Image 1 (tube, rainbow, N blue to C red):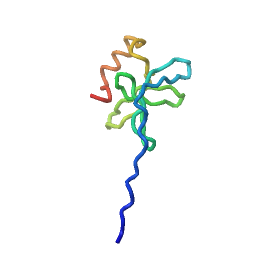
Image 2 (image 1 turned 90 degrees about the vertical axis):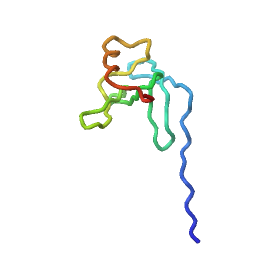
Image 3 (image 1 turned 90 degrees about the horizontal axis):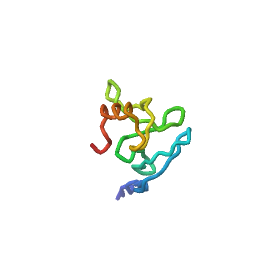
Image 4 (image 1 turned 180 degrees about the vertical axis):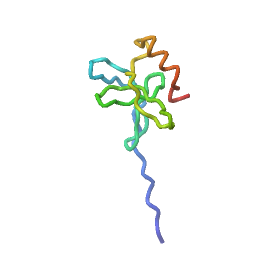
Length: 97
């Protein structure tokens, strides 16, 4: 008799809001989603973010082929967003939408 291997499950990410520090010292509030095998960050209001090559958390957006890529737009907390950043966010959807 052959037994199936147990399903591998990762430890879930913390449900608590985290504060991460950008390279320039800015404090960004984020949530870590996923588990130890696959995880990603979102802003407090649900925008998917990831680090760029310089270590800044930036918003993710879809390219022309539909692939998610890191934008040039650095992420900020809702209360600190500029008008330009708010216009940019109108073009992308929060993760939970």
